[in-house]
Length: 560
Image (cartoon, rainbow, N blue to C red):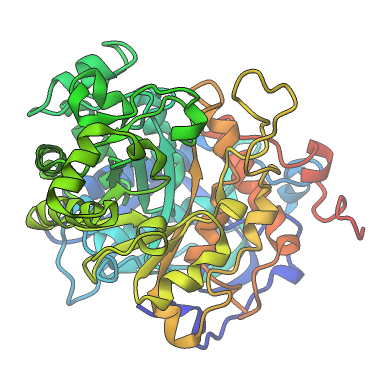
């Protein structure tokens, strides 16, 4: 699917004529026309759902939008927080209704069903108009998912002062469609556990991010309840209270789906699996060996003995048992940071290789073919980390999606092999970087991916850098990621937000409505608005600047 950023766009953007802080949409829409007329929202405002057979989750989305409209009570980020707007509001027309409808050829399906369709087939586009005279606003889309995206935009258009909810930029006309189909956020819940409530709050904040990449297990813990293998969580979770039960997972998946979010689960194999030894010790090589740095990228050491047929069958069965209960079209098997030293002196592995006349690469190829076949049989497209393509000579399905993480420079080598990619480069998108080293006995240690990745650094990422135009269609999108060695529920909000919104705009908007490239100077006031609106909704995002700067857009720029 070629990104729409290369389609010619005509748009009128009145941002340069508007009072500071009025134009605060994030992500910026594909096309945008605005005026300079004040418009207030009626205290009896009504969302009129004109959708035949409207699903329950569309009504839930409308109720959410109604709640935000009534309770955000967000004052404009200017000195006085809107006090100077009161004169314009005295005689302003009043908006009473937003009418929601689908195009004539569309069928009303649940938002959750639309959200898990294969990439490239989801319809997220919408058109929103708000007249200046107070007549009904309209929101039209080709799907309920598109209506959900439009409701999210609608809620960002209004401010609050002295009991009045209003906008200063009517009339408004927006048409919007994503530049890339995949816009993700990845969370590691294995290094440290996150209660379900924290995940739900994060999903509420994700908005235009349409994929929750759930890295649910790793070497340190296995907190996922699996029906066929109950011992994995019983022995592998940090405690009985720190387990994601089957009902937890289903609730999270349903909650995400109703918000237009696909849950992409990852069970990383064959590396990052040490904890499985707590239940199946014969399946893990170099378990807890020391020095751990010889056998693993981080402690504890231990990897699946993937050369053994019984381990291959176990892993295929495990992945299929988890995947069959998930509605997503995708499932990640990981494949990163496989340490070969772990197998050099591992007797069961070497016995199997020698007796069958195969190499470690041959064994990995068999392991991958069998485990991926099990997923494909469940209707899932496998997703892997880049090493499976760049470091090993194995056969992957042409449909396999590859996540590029080690460096943004690696994207070209992956697409050269014809694979579709998700951009997740650590040098731009890793949210955990910059906190210093976390391993003990190393007081001067830094994190391997220093420095801290600011929102503005992430925002400069070019998804198509070093690719040919013919390769552009292989870029599905991208995601920002939080690995949790030094994170947990206590710092989830500030370490993720609002930085993770950077990639949401990169991969939704691709460019400004005028066709100009995205740039941090134009974006900062809008991101400030998003950040302070998040606070109004109960999140605890990190500050981007002193409050003085937030009230004075551009005043704290280096060039001011």
